[in-house]
View 1 (cartoon, rainbow, N blue to C red):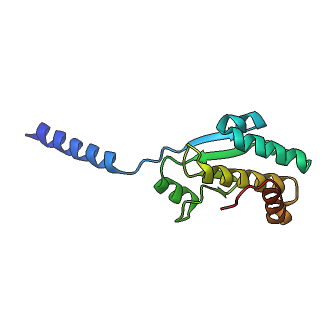
View 2 (cartoon, rainbow, N blue to C red):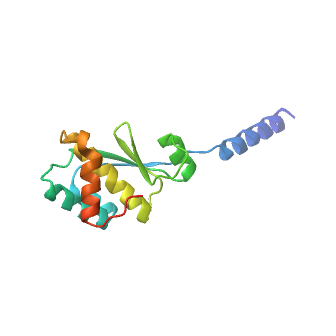
View 3 (tube, rainbow, N blue to C red):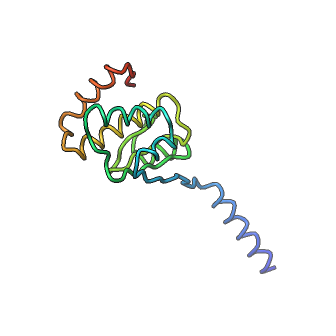
Length: 141
């Protein structure tokens, strides 16, 4: 009887553990432009164009976290809307590991913002970004 109780208790515990949301976010560290191309070629090419156009250096390392679902993104980003990408404590958090048009632009925007902060131009980030996006016909969302 004791063994049956233990088995039932362990089974109930296992079922509860399986129902709990498990965070499976993928983390990636970017140390060069080719790492960005590996994620998305459009983001890589546009980001490289931005660096050349404004004569800026890429940060030594950029931390990315890809949320496995929207619930995880909301928890990690501490927001209640799908922004595509947001920077929290120096880490860019993406709402999905598969980029769509919205998250591509959001990722590019956050890469540019981190680059401008690193290059001591953070005060003018919004102006520089909107200028660059307008010049290259990129729609901000």
